[in-house]
Image 1 (cartoon, rainbow, N blue to C red):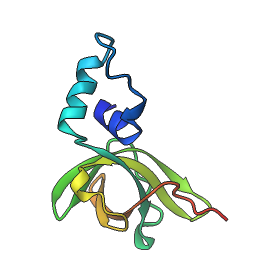
Image 2: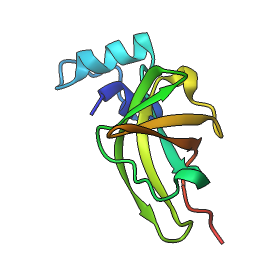
Image 3: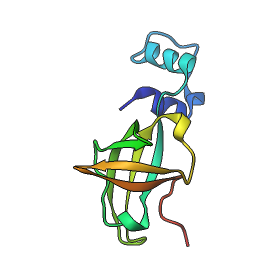
Image 4: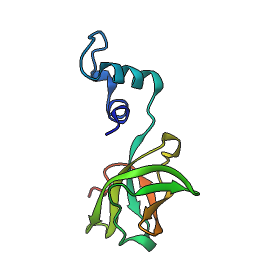
Length: 121
């Protein structure tokens, strides 16, 4: 897993920056200095590709440019669509944006959605 995605997305505030020389110290300092290169997002497949299930390692693109990869996915019986999570370039982290998931020899459309993926009742 990409360490900056975890640390920056889920709270570097919990880190004691005065403490030094622990495992991962230099990597966390670099993340703080450089910023996140990847962000975790939710994916919900579009209606026309509802039965497509995004799987680990599938590429994600926008207008032919690779922007990230799927980390996990499954079929949701509640919303009757494939859902998943992925890491993408932060410049493309726009909720509701349509992206393409490369599934074997075709491209299926999905939209970026925040968590939780299933609406609460």
